[in-house]
Image (cartoon, rainbow, N blue to C red):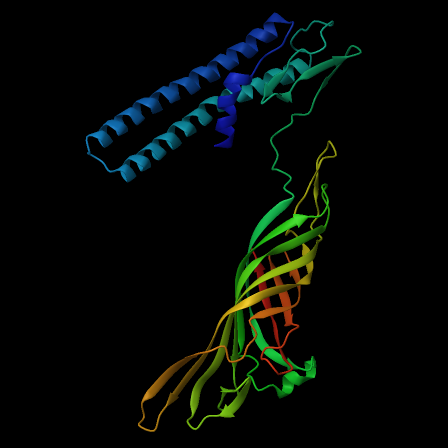
Length: 358
């Protein structure tokens, strides 16, 4: 569609400058053919739109059906335009090439033999300087060298707690290692720190995070004033899980080792997520809610599923450190809370696992 829009603008903004009549006539013929093809399809489309609007006024079709019919008609005629002008574009390219090779005569006194513009930008022309001919490289439409890109972030991992910042305390944790999990989904922006292509970026955004802790030894969380204790339940628990949901705002300094693309004219376009990436930073946020899920069978052999809604003395605001190592869109992450999980404790949440930047 972008190419078709450029062609439509071309009909209004293209001009041909030449001091050689034969060359000028050939270019003009091509432009006229393109205009006829485009105008023909536009007229057909107008007639179809009128017919659709008439059916809509007569209530023969619904507004949704009318919109769908118009979209379909526009797509068909846009494709017809694209196919129709493809041959004329090739003729124009060959004409420029013939001019470069000297197969079409030109006036030696002229500075610019041919100049074709769209949006006042040169598409390509033959230039004479000091009696020598050279063809300027076509400035084709390139992808924008975006300084900021966006990604959908998802992660899945295991979740647990450390005591007194001691990694070895995981062995004595009251929570199951593989069954305590974390899930995250969010949206990030990735901004290059320099105007020119480089490997250093600032990555920031927001995420929703679900941290789950499944207890060992048939225990559950019980409020004890301003403390939260783990106590043994008097029935056999098939599920004992504490879940706290958070909204966090991650911020990372990222090094992206993707190789940038360099054109022949030394223009360098930034490329990301094509190689290894390293991110180091942190996050801050707030907890949206805490729940404890219990499942057990009581003395009457009745299955009970219980959901307890309480803060359980978890902190409302949280902050911590975060890092990840990735290749293309896939990576590993570690996230560690710097504030304690519960008030009046030295337990801090830690999560690690797989990360996707899509």
